[in-house]
Length: 249
Image (cartoon, rainbow, N blue to C red; front, side, top):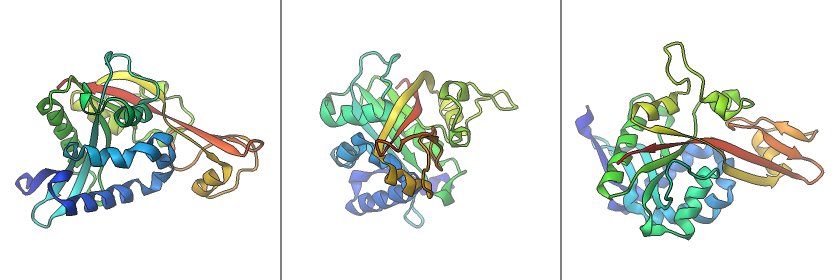
């Protein structure tokens, strides 16, 4: 069955680019509040266009269906063991403002798999493909601010405690973080302010589907940490923690 699957760069076909954008938008729609980080708003779409050879699509060649996407950009950082606390936002800012083609590391931004295609190993395949890109382009490492997939069910637990959890088989509890470890990733630590969204209370009420009647910490669906609502200022602050991992090329 794997013979019918092909990995193509988004740059290989203008139609593929359009379809990839639609798939990514659909996959991340339930977490659309993440698109309101300053880094995402200012740089993300442009970066994917500038580095189209680093945006990968897994295609079923029997029906030309898109099964998974992987998005990467170059960045620069000279001490891989001590990456910035700003995580994903820093990675996008780095690619967008300063380093561009002079980057020494390949930064993984996202892997997107449509709901109907999950559980078939496509995400793991795209991890391998990103590692392959890292080697082919001569980057020193592949780095990723990982968004643990089950952390949203433990929203009030500190990320450092969450990633220390193990399952009954003695493995990392979180399935997506576990997939990274199985693919050869090395844990570097928590990036506590990986994606920061500072928006009006009305913005957060829309995503929460309810009004906020008190200031304080409030959980919303899909978030990995609570949103800090301040009714006096009229703003809510979300600081999403992620987990830095790195792969050797």
